[in-house]
Image (cartoon, rainbow, N blue to C red; front, side):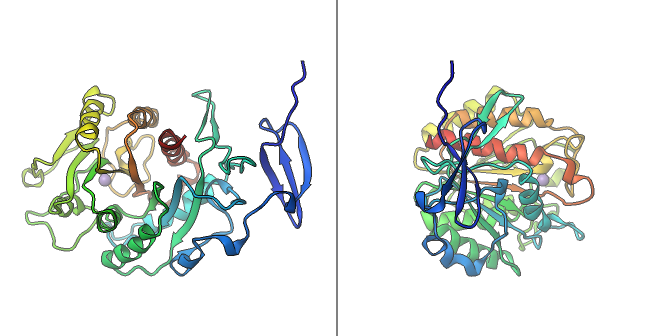
Length: 358
Ligand SMILES: [Mn+2]
């Protein structure tokens, strides 16, 4: 029996013309641009932030933005490395790298609903983040001389976020999490519950941590902030000097990504703090360096990629109202272009956020 196919995605658009396709990319139709009310540049509400942002000729997942819409998720690159204690770090190149890599997995605009096609996950046999409305803001413009300057710029972005939308930031070194959270606190005034996936506990490597905030001590400094209610550190491992491990009643540490304790704890925290702002920070060095060695401070052990993706799936099943996510500390060097794990992590985060909206 033959089913009638109908246009679902915009496949191509050029000067005045448009090619649309059905959901399985089996049939294609030519149409005119003016048949659909496509976005014109001057209607874009983010244009006024243009002085802060560098736009690329392509967006994440090569997604073309045709329709004016209120996005569920905004993607922002933060090419900041001034907070890294590794002198020759290349973490500032990661946002551009990830955007380019993601273009190998193009997604398409839906004609109805203004969402996107999402991606197909062969291993899971299902579509990821289909229907989610995504907006790529571009990268923050350099130079960002200091963390305080970074905070001011991010605050301007956060102030202009549409209601209920989630900001996904691509770093950059891990100190950006400090600046982003300060901006969230300033804008929303809510308590923060921070979930960090990281091999390190980032509480400083000196007996008395430096006053200057960097990627190895930002957690120590965040804990001084009253609005930071709880920090869950997942994946912390390896050896430290005895003075380095600072206990704090706000901090809960877990080594194993698949233990029920994490999810039970988070579910309880969610119930006890219905008004809090939840934030997820993913340091790529949380992954076992066998699967992802492109970080400045690898630590042996840790979850393989699949275990991390399963963790994210379970985490988002809890429907925690995340207001922001970041992905940090990717170090761009030879071979990283062949490693697709960061893209999968991003796709799973988008798919997880979809549960909050759709
Ligand atoms: Mn780390």
